[in-house]
Image (cartoon, rainbow, N blue to C red; front, top):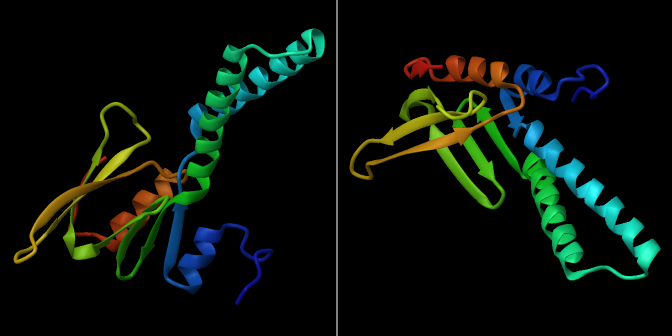
Length: 159
C-alpha cells in the first residue's frame, strides 16, 4: 500500500489503487458561520463571567445552542460521506447507511435551492420495487460528478 505522502489526494489514490472513492460532505459557509458565532458567543460569555462573576440563563442557553450547532457542523463533515466503487453508491449519514447499485441509478438532478447540492434518483425493479433519492453536497463536486458519470453512464444528468 502506498503512503499518503506520495498521493496527497486520498480519493485519487483510492481510485487508482483500490477502485474506491470517498467524498465527504462540504463544510461550507454555514459551518464556518456556526463556528464563528459559537466562538464569539463563548468569548462574550467569558468576558461577562469575568466582569460580573455570573452568567444569565439566556447566555447559557445561547452558548449551548450555538455550541451544539457548531458541533453538528463539524460532525457532519466527518460522518456524512459517499463511497463510490464498482458495486454501487454507498451513502452514509451518521448512523444511516444506504446502498444503491449502479444499474438502479436513473437520474442525477440539481437541487433548486442550493447549487452545490444535487439529488441522485434511483429505482429498484420488481418484486421489491422502490424509488428514492439521495441528497449529496460533496466538497469535491466536480470529482463526484465525474465519478458518477464514469460509474453510471446509463443515468440522465440534469446538472
